[in-house]
Image (tube, rainbow, N blue to C red; front, top):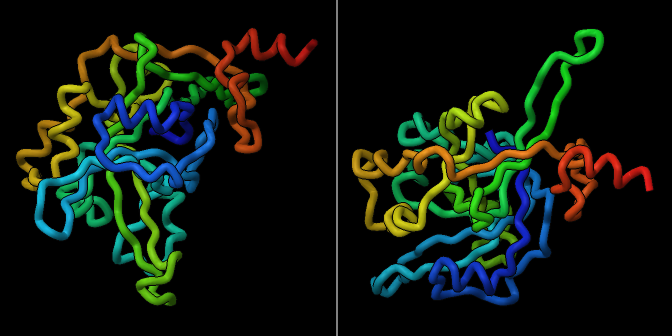
Length: 249
């Protein structure tokens, strides 16, 4: 699964990296080393203008935790931060978004917790930070959805909520001892197909739900501070021992 991630890249850099054609500088976010469910996150997506011209690649800020269009309230978002690659094409909450509303969440990396027996039989959870071995941006495959608050007029500035979910798949061998699932990430070569709104046939899309060959990711243990959403800063990425020592001086 994916329950926290770090996102500190400047939007200007993401615009260049992902060949974004449309971005509103007013729609921005502060760097975060501890993005949690219901927080805002940058997402790259493609939308076709109403005039029927070619789709436009955009950089948007979406709320993490998908709310289906038919949901009566947005309260389900915190439970829908992940969608399983194996069933995303058939689950009612995700299948429409999978067919026509796919996005990429560009992140520095994500956190995962390894559970092991602790003193007295109490489970011990060790957080790891997983990122690309080459230090590049990790492009997570995601879905997005529009939800309308029917208690407000359609033109009200807060009538619409745009949310997203991260797709997960089976962890590659090196990561499986930490957790059996990992976010599905994309290589640059597959980003274009993933974002293409013209691709809507689930049978054509499902081959894209395959992670790149193992070896592109690296996991390192970090300190427990990331477990609290109140903590946020570059110190969360320090190796576990360095993080512990930094609290002593």
